[in-house]
Image 1: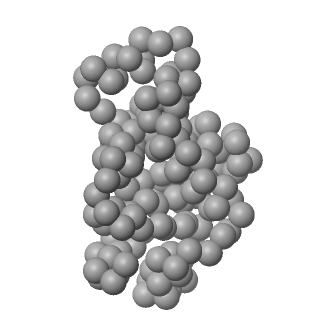
Image 2: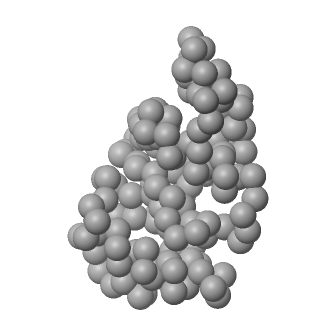
Length: 136
């Protein structure tokens, strides 16, 4: 998140409302992926990743975006800023009634998981995403 945007968000009284106001498309996307994750909705890219990686001892869901649009940039800004990521994870965990952790992965993919992933957990997912992204 650039300094001007961070100033707007963190000097406001309601940080989440300011994030929602500045990043409405990203907010909607995170709400949608949170619910889809909580409800275990299938996704073509996620299914392909799971077929490549195999069984994992943790729950995750990955979706791939087709292009590098404003939403992809906004998600990178929001999830790359530790404070906004933690605020959003707390909020959407409360909304869906279970822990959700957000990450960006691959080039244009979004990963939702049940905990903060370790390098050993995420590396196979990253490798599979890089392999598959050319076909999506």
